[in-house]
Length: 412
Image 1 (cartoon, helix red, strand yellow):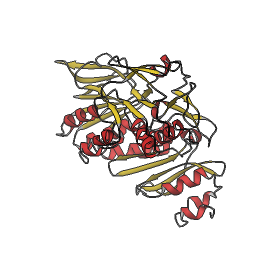
Image 2 (cartoon, helix red, strand yellow):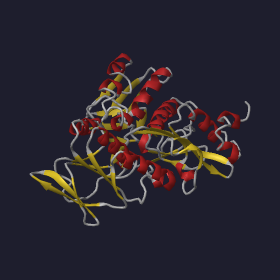
Image 3 (cartoon, helix red, strand yellow):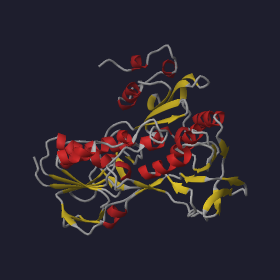
Image 4 (spheres, one colour):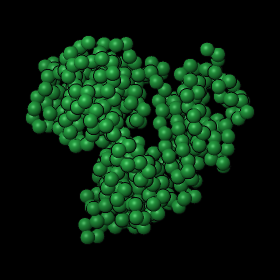
C-alpha cells in the first residue's frame, strides 16, 4: 500500500470520510487534513434541524469522534487551511505559512454562503447560515421565542430555519424570488404543499420579493425593506440565498473550473494526483453522462469514499443516485434522483397530500428519474433501485398504493 503523504484540503464531511476510508482500505502513509474552521469536522444537516432545535447535542454532530484522528495517525490541523497549491511541485502552503509536500491532494473546500450587497448587512442580528458557529448563534437567539425573524431566501435552508424558528415561538416572515417556495427544486405543486405547511404553522410569506435594505437602530437590525417598499420589522435577519463552490484554491492552482472543480467520475481533476469531492466538485455522472454538482451531505459522504479509493488507484466511480432529506414541522421528506432530469416535469403522486403521507415520482419516458417521500420512511432503497436500474414502469401501477413498490422491480 502506498506510504506517501496524502493531504486533504477541507475539514468537512467529504474530507473526514476520505481520511476514514483511506485507513479502512489499508493506506499506511501519512494523512493531513487542513481545516479552515477551528472545529473538528462535522455534519451540516443537523445544524438547521436536530441541533438547531435542541434535539441533538454537539456530541452528535462530528463525523467521527475527535480522538479518532490521533488514534488513526491522521494529522488534523484546525484553523490552518490550505491557501495555495502547486500541482507541478506537489506542494501546498498552509495559512500558517508552513509548506507541505504531497503525493496525492484532495480538495474538499466545500462552499460559501452567497452574500448580498444589501445596505445594513453589517448590522448586528444579520447573518448567513453555514457553520456550527452560525447554528449556535441562531439557536441562542431563537430558543426563548418572541423574536421577529426575516428569512431572505426560500430554498431548503430558508424553509428549515423558518420551521425551527416558528417551533421556538418566534414570528417569521420569509422572502423569496420565486412565486412559490422550492418550485425551482421540486415544482409548483409540491412547493405549494410546503408553503401550505408553513402557513398552517404561522409563517408569513412575501413572494416574489427581495430585500432592498436592512434598517437598524442602535447598531442592530430593526426592519427589512423589500423591493416593493414594504418595511417588515425584524430583530434577526438570516440571508439564505444559496451558496457558491469555494474554488479559490483550485482556481489559483490552475485546475479546470466550471460551476465548481471539473472532475471525472472518479473525482480526478485536470491535474494528475489532485482530486476533488463534496460541494466543490462538479463530477461526471456515469448514469446521465453529464456533470453534476450536488450540495447535499450524501454526495459529500459518497464522494469522500470514492475519492479515497481513486487516490489509492482503485477502480471507483461516483455512480450513486443523489439523495437528500429535510424535516420541517411534522413533515419528514426524502428525495432521491436527478433534479436536472426532473426539471419542468409534473410529478405523479401515490397517496394523499391532504393527509401529509404520499410519494411523488418524476418520469422521463416510462422510467423514474426522481422520487420523493413525505412521511413514508424506508422506501428510498426501492426508489433508488427503480432509478439506477432504469426500470420501465406503468404509471397506473406506480401510483396505485395497493401495488407494493418492490413489485415494480424485475426479479434479480
